[in-house]
Length: 571
Image (cartoon, rainbow, N blue to C red; front, side):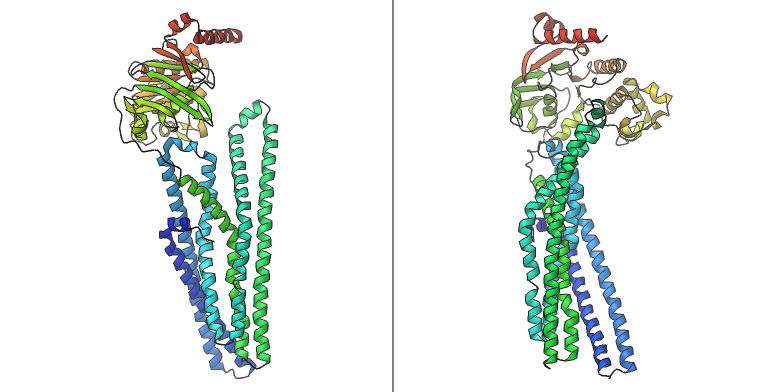
């Protein structure tokens, strides 16, 4: 069972596979010599021709052969380890580099949870494919030929019988493979589905508890877990049945060879030495293939994983832009249409975000607000129409230049476990004065100084910080980069009024010298914007300043009045 592309991809690592096979063959040769010496002792003992000097010489040679064989077996383990290590390193490197090239758009083709499972479990299966299965496959074929040639000098008929039985094991493997490939594809699908659900439910456990949906999700996961269990059991049944078939072939073939050798001895066609040699080495014909069969299911899992790996590696990359942007940022959307799963999120969209202005985009949920930000950042690639940044087509601009010049800050900042300093200065390139300055700008310096300064410990995901503090910490690390534009996507959602006010003050300060795009559903936070763009079903329905839109008494006015009523009700 070969995957040509996989082997070509790992061409450099095949040297370890070849060395492993070589040392296995040398170990087999040692085993044949050891058997010769052992059979010679038995023959002489039976015929009463064994002398002390012959015994001593044979024992000494046996010890030497066993030591040499032990050395070769150690080299086999070493080659297997090197192959295993290099395969994992190479495949994970290729996968990581591919994701880097896809940049923010990889989510268009594969989920993060699938990617994690592929990078861990999937590549682990491929590691075994190279470190165990492939060497054993080559060794099984070569060892059978070596044993056939060796034993044919003593009894040709028995050797032919043993040699003919050998291909029955690979044939049974091929027959099982046809059935197993489909079965293992279903197994891998159920494994990925269960893993994705588990990750999603774990991340949203608090929300599920609040809304009393944890029991419902548990039942859903139980069904998925049961499907995975059934898929696993079907795979195990297939493996056990295939092993039983191979055992029958292996032991039956060895028994046949031994029977022929004994019958030939009885009829005086071969010597006792030859008979014992064939009986002891008959199993060596089948042990390598039997071992190969035990690696078969792992190899199949590896092949299934390689299909998924090559699917990711074959994802078409967008033409890497080479142009850079600099200075004040302005953005223009022209006749842009974007669809997600055959549903138009944006349709013939035309809008302009002017440089050094505070622009807000508002609209009902699902109107396409956040999609606009993600298109600017390059998270989505497949759209019709044009996006121009500083009059340069977005597709021609490198993602590195975008990330260098535009800071994208969403409602759910990722806070790392570590110190405040480590969270802000991710590359450890800024001095404490610069860090303290940005902390002061986001009104967080007093809090930090009241704790342990920049060495204040932050727990995983910032669990010891409030929502507002996490968001301001996130803004602080963006400020250190000194980008020319900030995109704030619902940054004041799910935080208290006091924190919201502090964040809005930071944004207003930034708007005096930077291009600001704020995406929000809270209209009370954008009264001072230079321009408000109102979206409805993926289209711009009106735009202007707050007072102008209120006086127009259209979509924005209606949204504003509804929010005012709700806020008054909850007060």
